Length: 463
Image 1: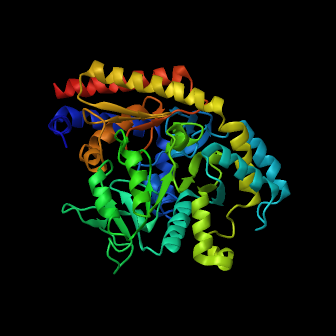
Image 2 (image 1 turned 30 degrees about the vertical axis):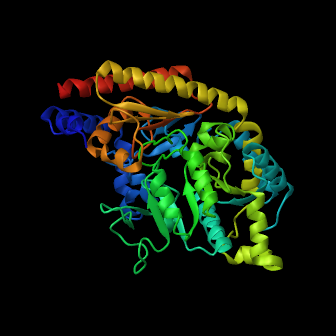
Image 3 (image 1 turned 60 degrees about the horizontal axis):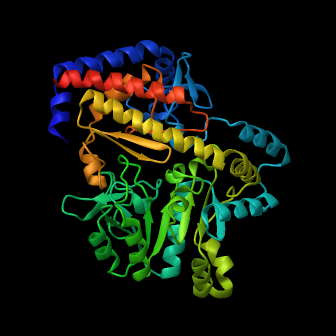
């Protein structure tokens, strides 16, 4: 942590600001507090899913409804939403084509465990969008990542995956690891979710943007696949150095390792995600979350080479073996979700929508940089497509360790509460913001103004 942050958050004036914002939040949200207290008898800690406790509020903010880029809580407070369900509603809450598709699909049956014609249409659309020839569906990006890592291990006969320190690829055991102080792979939590299984038995971890460490890990010959976000988005956004993704592709090919690109967050980089925008050539590509407006569905595509290798490895039994890998599920590719996905691909996640999102993404980043400049604080903004992150360090970090070293949870709580109390909702865990097709220029200008006011107050405290 920097000396600037330490000096700021250890001051009595900062403590006073934080207490003021906590009190303001409590005064504005009594219904959320009451619901949270009333729910603890049946919902563990008052929420139906543990991540909902990760917001830096004194208690969860309960949502009443959301539409477009607006959200209303149970007390009727309205928020400009730059979180968008942590990307799950990247295209806005309940777009009209999604609502229509839901209404039309339900009477025709929700799930049959049989394919329908929408699936082939969706696969054609995904091939044209992302460039990979073959596609399969899943219910979440976690499932999709689980499926492709299993396939990679099965085809190659290699036991391990490689991820990057500070990454996030869902609740996949192989990715819940990090680099320890001595550079060895350790569990990402003191709670051991795989008792008796060493952390490095199924996973290797290296720092993002470190070509030498990447090659050293791959040279051992036991890595089946590298699972990578092209931009790290879980620890504060980390952009690839120029040429790094080219090196990643070259090295994985050299050592016979499959490259999986996870576009769950970086889909916001363009119509075909970061992969299409930057002409990447992965062996597998995974998407999830936002692709169908929040309806549970995800997918993964793979290359002709993967298909050929799979058939070569398992021959005539490959169709049966596919399922025995633990790939798929009873509700996977259900007719309802696939129908909604088709509507989203054709009418929501369009080139025009991305043009709007990318244009305002640039305006948002410029506005945040201007707010930082006005405050004089030694902080920075990292932007990729429709997404931007305000980071508590003077430049964009190069790896997960550098990003996490500048996290301060008291400062994050103070900034998030400041924004919430003035009608701005951003992503929990860190300061990431996302533009939807329904976001307006006025919304972005309001965001920049509120951030500027917040930073000026913090700067005055430091002085």
